[in-house]
Length: 276
Ligand SMILES: Nc1ncnc2c1ncn2[C@@H]1O[C@H](COP(=O)(O)OP(=O)(O)OP(=O)(O)O)[C@@H](O)[C@H]1O
Ligand SMILES: [Mg+2]
Image 1: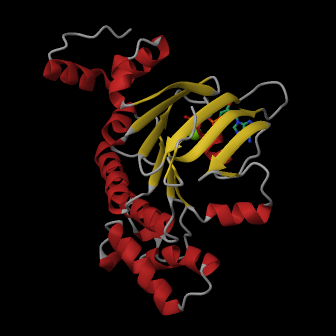
Image 2 (image 1 turned 180 degrees about the vertical axis):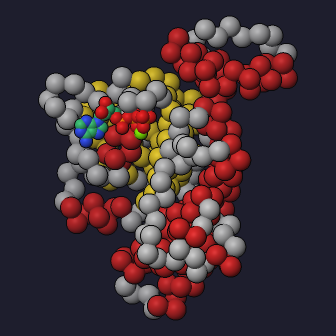
């Protein structure tokens, strides 16, 4: 797919071409992957375990070097960047992983101040605290918890602090790797809603979410990308996935959203879809 430029603004936030990665020189985890991730939208990456979703994210963040191929972030090629350039690039990203990975000996507020201390030395201490409080508020953490340590917080609160920390540097791209894996259904829905509300609050932000959960993907995504064998199997809207004739897609959909699919079909009067 060609990157179309409108008013000098690339439509793609992330543009990947023919990306290959082999760790051992024999097997390719990424095997000629090409993918455009649109700016300002929520893209959810799905796929069976071990299909290279996390490896792809690590390449996008410049944490892994590809064997060959191209990765552009806002039209800038990153594969040849120096460590310093990559560190600077990473400030464009906010990251939230499965385990929020908070600092255990820091309060909620201190956790969010931390990236500001590291990367925004130009700011006064007062300003840093002001920003951190604003981010915690945005993430929906009640003020009475700002002084608590991670061990004194619930799983949901920790996620909110993790998100607030991811937002600290005002990132252009938000990256989530399995943000709800291992959470109960109530917390899963809270985190999914938080991803959407955060995205909507921050005009122009690009969100990339890796998820096992197809139901969540369909609820929150503008675009869904399914990976298989180190390539993109299907890139489309949730509707494209429901309509797909690709066998593996049909199986993934059937496994993930059998119930939702039935509801969807009965609502649209499509009759019963055969998904085996
Ligand atoms: N640092 C590494 N060294 C060697 N092999 C690796 C490394 N990181 C990942 N792999 C391999 O790459 C493949 C893809 O891994 P990846 O973590 O991207 O899968 P995934 O799609 O994120 O799976 P899951 O849904 O289980 O998180 C796996 O076979 C894994 O063993
Ligand atoms: Mg993974």
